[in-house]
Image 1 (spheres, rainbow, N blue to C red):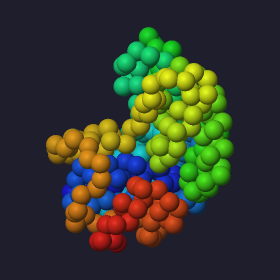
Image 2 (image 1 turned 45 degrees about the vertical axis):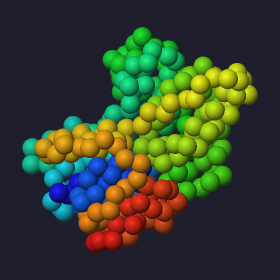
Image 3 (image 1 turned 90 degrees about the horizontal axis):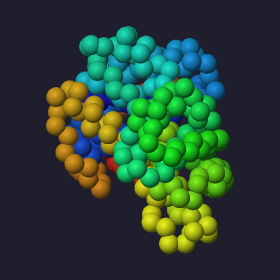
Image 4 (image 1 turned 180 degrees about the horizontal axis):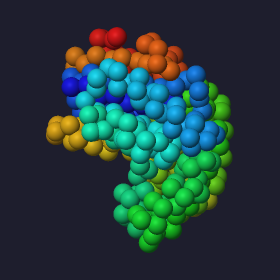
Length: 271
């Protein structure tokens, strides 16, 4: 079995690590586009063109499924990707976890890039899945770029700024960019610190990402039955192929700043 994942940058690490946990024996192809980052400020057509190039580079390695591990690409390019690659290659998009976050009925915040915050796409998901909940859209300027470059100080600044914009009674936060899942614990810590300052004694904030759900959906699409999530990757013989703007390479050094990147780097069969 071979699963490919695509993103503009290292945001795909979270979903790739979940695939690894579910199927340690699977080969992984990680295709990203550092030469053209970031995708967020680009026009929808430009995002689509870049996404198609990254997807085709991955498709050349003949995977069984392709995960679009990028919210921006899923918003703008998913129809084009499916038209170009399906039915021969199943394409699985990433949708912010608004539905499960709203299921508890309490106030919800959605952290996303400025381009996604307030977009018709995100507003449509809110209407469809969270119409009965109080929802706050929180823009996070600079956070994805800071995570991409493993810039610790910039991550802290961006997380603190977004936490300050998050209402104190929010108990569920949707991580609406795949990069954010790589710093989920730092986000949780910042939110709890702000809540404690404003209203001590509130229950912990629950974060909702998409990585496990999209990994499990990819396996279902190719007829595999995913196991429940496990806390760490299991030993396995899967091979890792890394494509940076179409070029075979090692994992970027910045990927090793995150637990998910270190898990994937531990795969012994690379290339």
